[in-house]
Structures are given as C-alpha cells and as structure tokens.
Length: 248
Image (tube, rainbow, N blue to C red):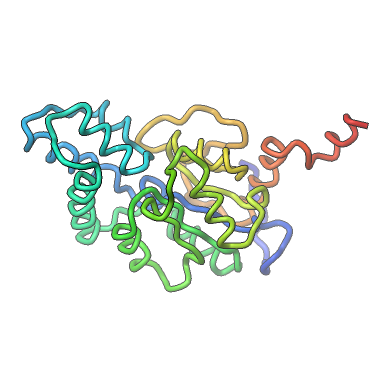
C-alpha cells in the first residue's frame, strides 16, 4: 500500500473516510478461537463430533445461523437461541479473562478517534460480548454499536452495515468497512461500503469493492481514506467522472 504522509487532520477532512465501520470477531479481537473452543465443548458434551472445517463454516455468520448449523450437523438439542446463549456465555467468560487484541487494531481506533473520524462496531456477536470489548476501550471509541441481536437479517445480508451508516448519518459510499471474513466482506460490499479485508481464520476471496492487507499494523487514518476513495468507484461506478463521460 502507498504510504500517505501523516498530517494534522480535522473532522470532514477530504483525505479521511467519512466513517469507519468495524467488524469485531477476528478483526479487532481474536475471539474466533474462543468461539471454536466453545463449539467443540458443546458438541462433545452432546456426544457428537465437531471439526475445524465445521467451525470455519461458522466464521462471520449470524449467531442464529451458526446455531442452526450446529443443530443440523450434531446431536446438540434445543432451540437456536439456547445454543447461542450457551456458546456466548463461554466466549464472554474467556474474553473477560483475556482480551486477545488483533495487531494494530487498538492503535488505529485511537488514531481515528484523535482525527475525529466516527467509528461504528458492526458485529454479529450479541450485545453481551460487544459490551466486553467496548468496556476495554476509551469512552467514545465507537459512535454506534450494531450487534447481531439488533438486526433481523445478519451478515452476509447488508442490513447491519446499512444500519450503522444510518446511525452515523453517513453515505455508505464515503465510509470504509474493516472485515476479516468472506461473510462479513460480502455484507459490507453489498451495502455499498468500500471494504478493507484483513483475512485471519479463513481465506477471503477477492470481492469487488474490497482490498486485502495482511495486517492493520502501521496503517493511518489517511491510509484508510486513500483505500476508501480507490474502492468507492468499484462499488459506485455512477460516481466516476469517466463513467459520466462514457454515457454521454
């Protein structure tokens, strides 16, 4: 990625994204191993077998969808909501004991806050787990929090990202999403949000309107602005000057 010289920035600065919309699990915190561990415990207690391949199918999914997959593939019994609650309790407990930050995430969040760039948390985890993360960060880090139990259609549907942009009062095309999974990146790009992908637990295929980087370490708000501008025309070709010329 081309480095952008760090400069004093102000809210509304054209070099910065209008907002940054953050996935949580696997992007800000490395909670995927905790989810996978709790899935193994749950399935094995029911006398079933769970594999890493099964676990990877759940990465980034809406939690009720994940619960449905577990109920379909294993001897676990109960309603999807009950399965989610059992998994969630274990992950919350593990995360409270140790917050596994992803490299560069806290630093970039702090830098964005210092530059006045609004941030939203857009996660399929439910409120209980999102609160654990929010409590560990400085007040005001997130201007909006959208969780899986607040939307009717989870990722890969774009509802959560559209809701986050609406709460912040920004045009999705002028924002930037940060994701780590195919499901999440599909949701954000479907919402028309340029997306920076940092693959982690599972590989992410190339998606229109997205750019992959190996890590958030060393990235600045200006870097994110440059990425958002470079990707926006892929998702919104009608905004391109040459697109208007082509139609003339």
